[in-house]
Image 1 (tube, rainbow, N blue to C red):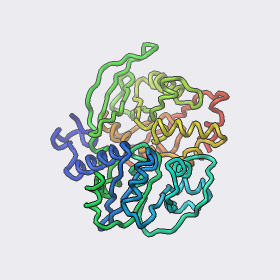
Image 2: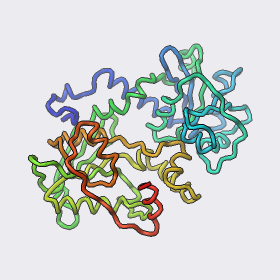
Image 3: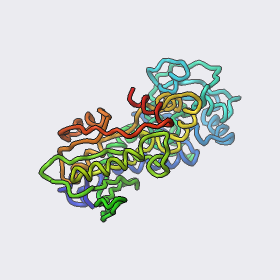
Image 4: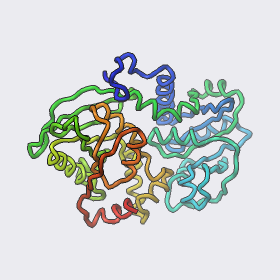
Length: 367
């Protein structure tokens, strides 16, 4: 295995440090717990908060959650983006009391439906819920959570409910620890349509997900590497959806890199600008209800763009380059690469054709 963070290190040294390993294991366990509809305990210094995702909530699990602190109402916590879509201030996570009459369907409606009818006002609480919401985003679940702040006897309650305890710092460090675990796993020639010479290099995180570098031709190591950073798009890349321009951009990028005598497509596992395929399709449904791309993401509780291009910088170095020319119309990609120490020699304009189905999407993206 070759670490993409520092390819000169041995396989043993490239493995995440103990703290990184604990971070990856802890967060992955918490994500699995969330997806199974179970609660978890968020440890924030000396404080402990009892949490459960709204997505996947059942009548039984909601009733059990109320019994964690039977003399106290739990809170429904939403992201600032979702709060703003509900008409509240976008300054911090939004907290609302949950009553005994609330159903999973009603809570899900407050968390993600549009338009949402709510009959409660947010309240001010002095606790940090952002890490819990971030954990849900890592799990590619709706960032809406049930929350008991500052619970006593946290370890006893955790054992009683089968709830893992996850440290806030592990959640906040998860992305960096995950990227540090990325290793080159396999490669082989994969000739593509049109007779273009390509070689696929597959990287893998310790958590199991993959990233792909499609090497086109024979790039000159003495010159900046021409690249296209392309986020995965199952709808466009695989099925040819015309709701976006992704499939066209991918095919055009391979052809353009071939014309430039070599380069690489960095194909990143960041579907739907980092919110995952399930939420991307949810956003499509909201777009059919007159929301644009950005507002649809906000209605689900997500930021405009959750992609992290640090992994692209690591992959560029793993390919033996530290200077690139980038096929893009997105200045954020250039800024991010420079932030992570990659020299950007130039930008190469990359514009796919517009059709009647993606015209509004492309205008929103440009804006």
